[in-house]
Length: 267
Image 1: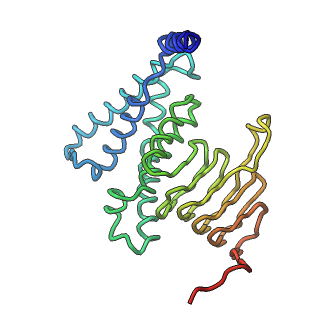
Image 2: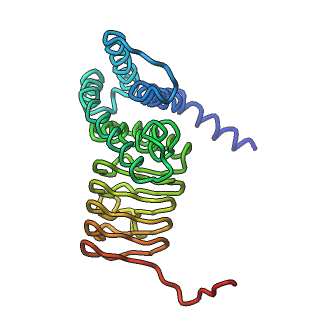
Image 3: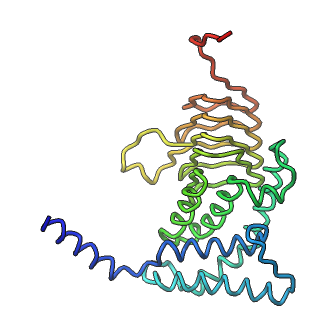
């Protein structure tokens, strides 16, 4: 027990000098930004352009405050990086509007985009991913991962902030979906729950290599499908059926389905 207490004391001393902002502050920034872009979430409506402008500036200052805490680890000044992120805000919003439309059109159970924005975990996870991806592109360490892991904990949808995802991305249901670090996804792609876009087991030395698949435009991947490997490409306009295990590329317009010879129908 004494040794444990000594190790814990050292861990707490290390934590005391680590100035990285708390996960709560980081997630609060992300939530406030999502609520500003989509007031459907919390009903806090701001109608005057002047007040909206002030709210946007507040978000920028909130991010700058987070970045100031980790200034030594940043590739540039906190104010400059926060400014670059805010310049990307129109693109983040545009992408998310397109994502909401894609989810609405892709799910017969959806009544309208408002329902998607308000209630769909897929949209929630994509929203946090789009924010984190821009921060990742600015070479800001750890913070993007904390943001996407917060959404992961809320939705069960795990998207690495480094993944590249095109426009009109639709996640239907989504629980258990995994999108790995070097995954590349084109436009108008739809995935269901339990889909894994992952890596085969590789040595740690290959951490910087492309380990996850490429999914081209207009691909649909049904629930439980697993697609592995950095060399694996799913050609555009393909359909990957449920529970398919795919570790090699397929050309455009492919139809890949799982077939079991051991299934006995119950009557």
